[in-house]
Length: 135
Picture 1: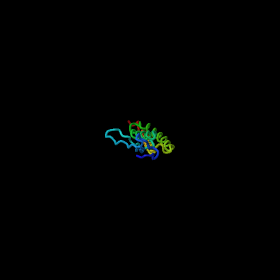
Picture 2 (picture 1 turned 90 degrees about the horizontal axis):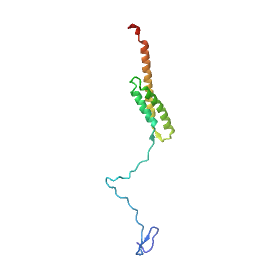
Picture 3 (picture 1 turned 90 degrees about the vertical axis):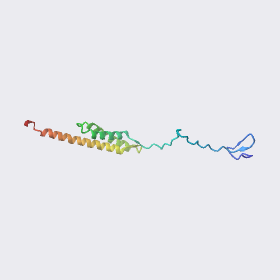
Picture 4 (picture 1 turned 45 degrees about the vertical axis):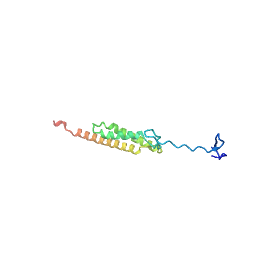
């Protein structure tokens, strides 16, 4: 309180005296159970969808290979999605992640394809070596 204004923000009351500006309002204390304003960290790079699909297809191709070779379809898709996903992650400049998933999916798919080819060769060798005339 003063008889003259001391600077910007001071105000004169009806009694003719000058008063300082009001202090800044402090935030209200948190109330238990009330929703609080949360701090969200900035979102980091997102996983590439092709990389996730490559990993799922590669693993499922490897796992279902024993079912009469039906796992060859997801294995081939795992290799294709893995190559595309790896390329997308590398070209994104850090906006996408998932290079490891894409690589793992492509490797699992390639292993499943290789095992399928070995299995087919063994089946063909067994078919040509069987002597059906001895029965």
